[in-house]
Image (cartoon, rainbow, N blue to C red):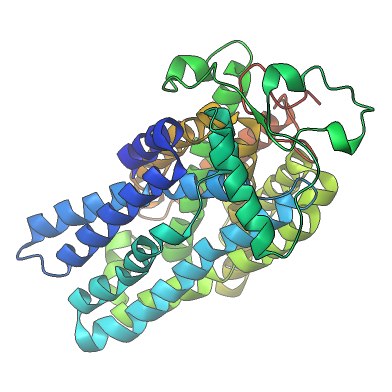
Amino acid sequence: MLVGAYSWGVVSDTYGRKKGFLGSALVTSIAGLLSSFAPNYISLLILRGVVGVGIGCGHVFTSWFLEFVPVANRGAWMIVFSTFWTVGTIVEASLAWWIVPTYGWRWLLGVSAIPSLVALMSYGLVPESPRYLCAQGKLSEARRILEKGATLNQKELPVGLLVSDHITTLTNDNESLENAPLLSSTKSETRSPSLFMLLSPKLIKTTLLLWFLYFANTFSYYGIILLTSQLSIGQSECDSPTLHSETINDSSLYVNVFITSLAELPGLGLAFFILDRVGRKISMEIMLVAGFFLLLPLVVHQNEVMTTGFLFGARMFISASFIIVCIYAPEVYPTSLRTTGVGIATAIGRIGGMVCPLIAVGMGSGCHQTLPVILFEVTILLSALSVVILPFETKGKELADTVDSPVQVK
């Protein structure tokens, strides 16, 4: 997923959102189906790794959808969109609970490839992003997509023209809507996006802070999941991971994933309610602070009910914080390098997910619950401080198309 996150971002910013979507759907569906027929363990690992590369395109879908949503309720709709990740997790746990004990893991992998196949078959039905087309100077193609969308929704397009950014900057704030551009475009940044553009003077602070936030949120999110499996499954006292694996049957593992995934739904509901009202930065702060205080009592051992409750609440808020970061990042980057910027941030976040088990399981083995909890608490606290110094608030702001026209500074 780490490789895929960056690769699909570059492909989507260079060749279009649809091309990134097509490549991801092809890789995920084909490798997913083949993995169900894997003849040995090594080939299974390789094929599932290829599936991970395909799934790394997830952030492209977020940016793509974002570019269609109106400013006024963009946050709420992005939360609705993000909810499908949680729903997918719950459905997959349910399928594993039902299929694996009776039919085996091959059937689970085969069935799990079906959504990717459906997405692949729908390729011809989905439009390219008009904003991306405008950023590439393809105004006529963008206009046709907007007209088709207006016809489909039985609406009329607002009066206006698709114009270049240098004309847009001359538009007076008090001009009538008849003269306001629908979308802006430029041909100055059609070259392939690069890391150097993300580290340009106008974006470097935002980029570095987002890298840390992706890393820290992923690290904390999977850390809480690991704590849930170590502290809440069938025992109220801390034991080694080996003992847990010996005492937990397959069915209870699926039940655990199912139940703990439900914790994310209330957090998403809260984010849906406040995101467009108080803004992205304040929403992230609320989620991180709440997660910090809910995890704090677990510095010392609690009974099983208290432990489960605190972990449920912590996962609810930290997962919501992570989703808000994933909404904020594509909003703050310009169209010309939106998926590349988010792709690199996502890849760095995956590194946080990779190192988390190595650190957390090692620190939490035996009976050392306090150390990993303190580590996650420090990570969450640093995340909250990073949000405070983020230079942009994207609530109610139009998406930027170029580095020279970024989101307004708060």
